Length: 246
Ligand SMILES: C[S@@+](CC[C@H](N)C(=O)[O-])C[C@H]1O[C@@H](n2cnc3c(N)ncnc32)[C@H](O)[C@@H]1O
Image 1 (cartoon, rainbow, N blue to C red):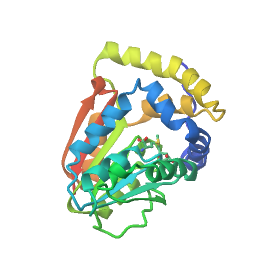
Image 2: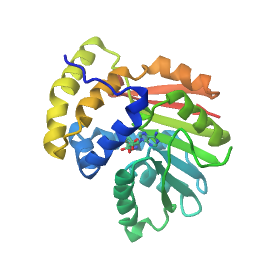
Image 3: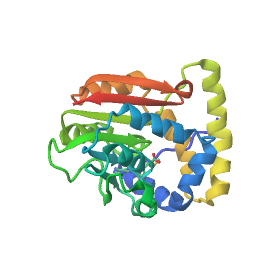
C-alpha cells in the first residue's frame, strides 16, 4: 500500500497546522464517521481512567475541539478548572463554540478555558496541574520526547497523565484489515466529508504507522520520569490508553 510522505521535522509543525486549519470545521463529524462513533467511547474511558477529582486542575493538551475537556469538566466540577491547550486557532475556535454552547444543566461543570499553546513549550508553572490528558495529539508534535518532558514538568508530584492515541493492533489479521481500511478507504471518505485538499486523511494513517507501538511508547513515558506506567488496548489495539503518575 502506498505510504504518504511524512513531513520532515523542520516542516512538520507548519504542515500539520495547515492540515488542522483546513480540517477543523469537519473534524468532529469526520471523527465520528471514520471511527464508526467509537471515538466517543474511547474518550469517555480515557477520562474515567484518569481518576479526576472535584476541584482539580486538568489540562487537555492538543485539545482541539475540546471533546475531552468537556468530559473532564464534568468530573472536576464547579470548583475545578479545565484548560484546553492547542496550537491550532481554528480547532480551538470550534472547541470554544462547544464550551460556550453547554446547556444550563452543565452549571455544575468546571469552567473550560481555551489557550493557544505549543505542547513543547507549555506556558504553565512547574507542578501546577493535577491531571493531564492528550487525545490523538502526541503523534502530531514535532519532538515527542520534549512534549513528554513538558507534561512531566507541569504535573504535580502524584499527578496523573493519560494519553489516548492510535497504536498497533495486536492480532495479525486484524492488523491487515485495519491497514486496508486506514490506507485504502479512510482517506477517500475523509476527503469527501471535509473537502480537504491538504492531505490530512493520508497523513493520518501514515503518521499512525510511524508512531511508536505500545511497549516502545511506554518506555518513552518511563524515560520522561513517570512511574506506574501502564497501557490498555482498545478495539484490539487500534488505539491504546497509556497512563503514568508523576
Ligand atoms: C487529531 S487532533 C486531536 C484533537 C482532540 N484532542 C481530540 O481528541 O479530538 C490533534 C490536535 O493536536 C494539535 N497539535 C498538533 N501539534 C501540536 C503542538 N505542537 N502543540 C499543541 N497542539 C498541537 C492540533 O492542532 C490538533 O488540534
